[in-house]
Image (cartoon, rainbow, N blue to C red; front, side, top):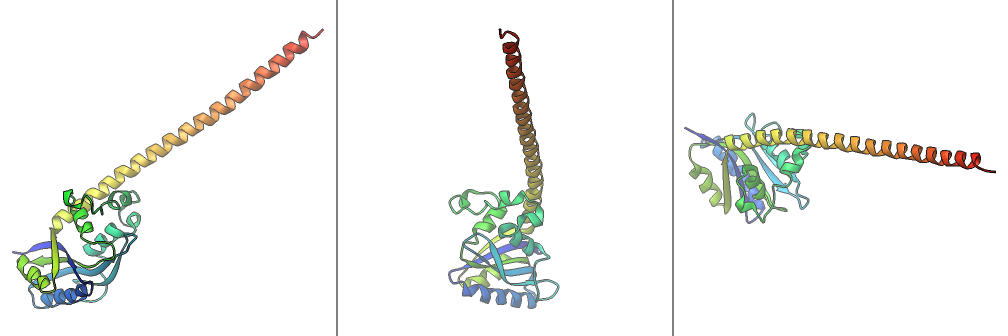
Length: 212
């Protein structure tokens, strides 16, 4: 029986990420693990994540943009609005916070906090018979493995999408209320100005009537 997990492997030296990427592909070729998708990614100082190299389970070349890893890259450091809704960026974009990373129960936050600014890591979706195979291979490269189940990751992505939709509905509601409020203020201003003009006109008429 195998478990499908998302793993993030970080290293003391960024160059080790490329060796680890090659090692994962070798483990896949040997049948010790099955790679569904993998990528070498780097987080810039601006928080965005760039893919340096990638692989999927259709062929060990090409990109991982169509699978879970590509989705994760986009959610954790890319164009959130294009992927799962405009408001999601507000929800996921704040996940990386080194100060409270240890206290969070969010799977996406844990994965995000494992990719530090300026750091290059391996992000992969793998079927594993045992954690030991990858852990031992990465330990040989002084890599640290963070492992979370695909089920948990996908469940949180779905929850984030639902939250994004709710946030968008609330944003539209607030926008409409603001627009209506401004419209009422404008109407009140016009009505008050008309009242003032009418009052001034009445005063002029009364003055003219009573003028000797």
